[in-house]
Image (cartoon, rainbow, N blue to C red; front, top):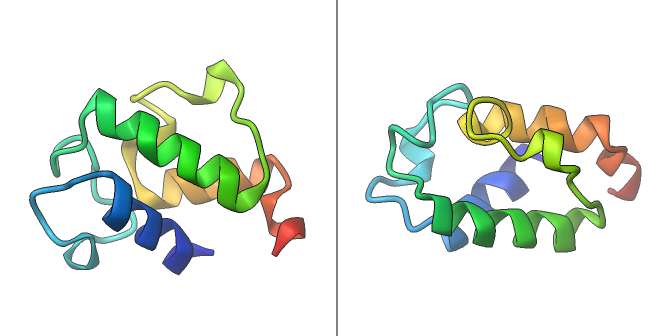
Length: 83
């Protein structure tokens, strides 16, 4: 799952750094994530993992802070069952 999240970030976040160089806990906003690119990442994650993120998860301080945060949110929504 982590590799798929990283691939989606690579394709949709338009980060100025290689996502492969970031740890799972690295702050994606500090790495260059914008609110616009976070929408693209969200839509790609929802399509790939067949989930819908509730608004409460779509806060920059929680959900999109890191790869591990995104993974935790997906697991919480039952995305692991889709794999």
